[in-house]
Length: 468
Image (cartoon, rainbow, N blue to C red; front, side):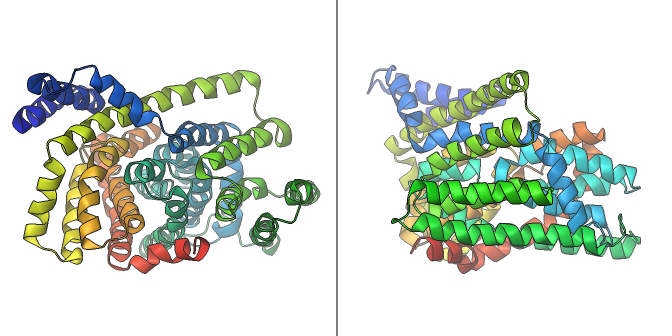
């Protein structure tokens, strides 16, 4: 029966059908052959798989990212990053990384970063004389920050599948995301030194000072919001109205470039850490903030644009949730056939050392990432890994970051790396040249992966601080 189950799954995949359909057909073949339960059970299991309150965050985070991408926020982020680090040698390479760090706090997906901010960055780098391969490589690497720095769509899916706190997962992504950005900027500096890249704008105290003031303002606002939202004695008007009014007045007076966009991750993480709202409600807050910026503050959105953005979001959400629904029945069959227990026993027979397991898991996930879409990989593999990490005493929050980063690296590897196809279209390079351009930029990502794998405190320090 197990052979029939996996045979039907692999045979369907080999025909080129989507993996979600392959999971459904493989599960249906097993249920039909065993006759243990009615085939209609597959429908009930699939519906049950998406009947989850935390999964409501999926469409709202996708919606918020699409709204930010279409409301002209990407141009503001780019200009802010240019003022902050464009004067360094290899300036636009650094701008690429910093811009992705900011945009990661709004989008939650690597493809949105590559297709939105990446379009602006690659064009600007080409216009300034950078080789297109260099522009494509750094854009691909920096786009992986999207699902690491919260909010993160893959972390929502992992949290639901592994039954762990999505808020803790979000908090766990900040330090690894900062390390990834640092390693990428070091590599940009190396290329700038070797290839004699210069600065792209002249150093100007006023321009850089303005960007630093924006960062300082965000820090002050974050501290104030954390204090206000954590004080249960204050009214809602004081918690929300006073800080928002102060921010709007300051933004209007000083005409900040990206202050309002920079506040997005502050609002989301601050609200979750203070208990003001759940991760699902944070997704709704992100949409409300994006609508406010697009329609009221910047006035860059129109009703026609909103309709198109809404339809795109519905389409993307349907695809994601269909994968989750298909994976739920697939995971149920895996559990019923005791495949997960057999895999756990086999892995533990090789070694019961957590460090050895993490090495094997990394190698396996890097391989899977080359052939499988991120959401599908998470929904299929989490039920397999959970029994093993529970027996080995590995923190599921720590393993979640390791898993997501592995699969983000998979977005940059052939044959099915989605970011590769997006950037190939944007840059108009051949697929082979795109792969070659991205390959060196896997180094900072792999360095971060090794660090967070074998130093769990890098991942767990902030969640333990915010969620004692």
